[in-house]
Structure formats: structure tokens, C-alpha cells
Amino acid sequence: MNMRLLLPFLLAPLASFAPGPKPAPAADANLSKIKLPAGFTIGYFAQGVKSARELAVGPDGTVYVGTKDDKVYALPDRNKDGRADEIVTVATGLNAPNGVAVRNGALYVAEINRILRYDNIAARLKQKPKPVVVYGKLPNKEWHGFRYIAFGPDGKLYVPVGAPCNTCLPEEPIYATINRMNADGTGLETYAYGVRNTVGFDWSPRDKALWFTDNGRDMLGDNLPPDELNRAAGPGQHFGFPYFFAGDIADPEFGKGKSMDTYVKPARKLGAHVAALGMKFYTGSKFPAQYRNQIFIPEHGSWNRSSKIGYRISLVKLDATGKQALSYETFADGWLQGQTPWGRPVCLLVLPDGSLLVSDDQNDAVYRISYKG
Image (cartoon, rainbow, N blue to C red; front, top):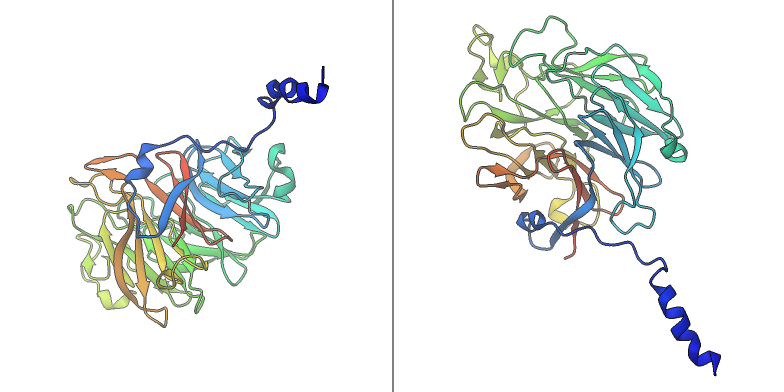
């Protein structure tokens, strides 16, 4: 018998065991509910990333994910197909390690009470490396204790400390501030005052000014006060807490006898109780020109408003100088269906390929938004 004729039949059963392409993520009907401008698409970068919060990317393209749980994850995408190859647990047993940042090959992680550094992280992803404590004297109160961290254009690490209350005169000056320190944890100084709770900030690609979201107080009704988008032109400015909110709403208790002219007004009022979080300037080149150098804001969603609001990604467009906010509009929504949310956007990250990642701590996912044209 001719073996050449038999060979395909003998090999056929083995073909089923040969490695094939990476399977596509499981279909999710919820994604079809997300509304985006024409030409944009959304898909899963990773699923099963429990309590996903702040995002950061390393030099090799690995995405790191902080959480409000006790773990930090890494999401490598080695073949650059727009989906994480696996979910690697980098660290566990931490105290709400919300904040992550990467610098000089090291992963910085912000717990509620301290900042850690994992050196040479890309080579040690699966080793659960022992960290170095960079700074260990942050307050340990959980109220507004989730830390968002990032390195600024000045090379310093910025870390906020939210107010330990809904509204109060904090007992320690470090509360309700944004601070910065050297990369080794020395030289801590306060950069901005009167910031109730920011869990998202970024620097303008035009003039390097710091922009940040700030969550307004609760218990003044459904429509007061608005959340804020602020611009800090330099160090030492005061943004009103606990005396004023949104630039012109006096706190019933602490605003008496105060002049709002003393404080910096927001660059833009946002929705009341939308919980504006991990904002980013879009610095990629793949989105259409009208989106470049503009501000995208994930709105985590209200928790006690009688009619829910937020659960979306908003877009703030700036003027040609990059200093004035011109408009505030919805870019992506659908995480809220009626009064039932199935997801809550938290943080954004612009990838080197120009796509935009979005973390979601309710749906335990990281999405990838891209533009197809």
C-alpha cells in the first residue's frame, strides 16, 4: 500500500491535539449594550480581574492592575493581539492596593497606609517578589483611603490623601490634599490643598499642568454638589474643601463666613454624584483628531442618589490652549441599564498602540476601546 496516500489519514487524528490560535474571549451580551461614537469598538482585554482599579503599563507592554481587594495583577499581551494572554497575581495579602505606577522597570503599589516598590518586575512576574517599602507613614483610615498614584513630569510620585469623612475639618493637615515625593520616598510635600477625594489625575500634554477629578460631598440632595474637574497651575493652591464645593456651593456648616474668592474654582463642573475617577488625557494617535489631548473621565456611578447617574465614560473637550474646558459630554455608556448597573468604570490607560483600556471593579474586567474608522 502507498504510504504517501495513507499518511494524511494517519496524521489527521493528531491534528486535533496540535496547538491552535488563542481562543477568543467568551461572548458577553453586556458588551453589546455599550454605546460608543461611530467607528469605535469595545472588547475585553481581560476578564476575571477581581475588583480591577488603577492601571499602569510597563516598558514591555505588560499592564498592571491595582485592586480594592488584596491583590495586584499583571496582564501580559506578548503577541500584541489586544487581549491579555493570562492573569498573573503579582502580589497578595495587601491592604487595598488600589494604586499602581511603573518607573525605571519597577512597579510602585499604593496601599491605604504605605507605598511599595517591586524592582525589576517584568522579570519576576510569577515569583511574587518581596517589595521595598518606599513610604510607610500614610494615614490608615479607610474612608476615602484608596490611593491613586502617578509619576509627574517632574519625576516625582504624586499621591492623594482623601478627607476621612463626608465633610469635616480634618484633624491632620495631610488629609484632603494631593502630595508628591521623590521616587525613593523622601521629600514628601503637599502640592494641592482642599481636595476632598481625588482618585484620578493626569498632566496636560501641552503645558504639563496637573488636572484632577474631585468627588463632591454627599447628603445635600440628588443634584448638589457637582463633582469637579480641576486644573492646578502650580503648587500651593487650595480647591475649597471643606468650605466650598464646585466653586460656588458653600458647605452648610463650614462655609459660613468664608469667601469663595479665596479658593480655586473648578475648570469644569461635572454631574452631581457621578463619582468621577481615573481620568486621562488621550495622548495616542489612533483616535480621530478631535479626541487628541482631550480628557476622558470614567464615572464610577452614584451610590445613594434616588435615581442613579454615572456608570459611563465622559469626555471634556478643551480649547486650543489646553487650559479652558469647553464642553462635557458622554463618550461611552451602557453600564447602567434602567436603574440596574452591570459594571462600573474606574480607571483609564492609553496603550502604546493608541487604544484605551478601562477597568471595571464590578464586572471584574478590563476593556479595550479602539478606533476602526
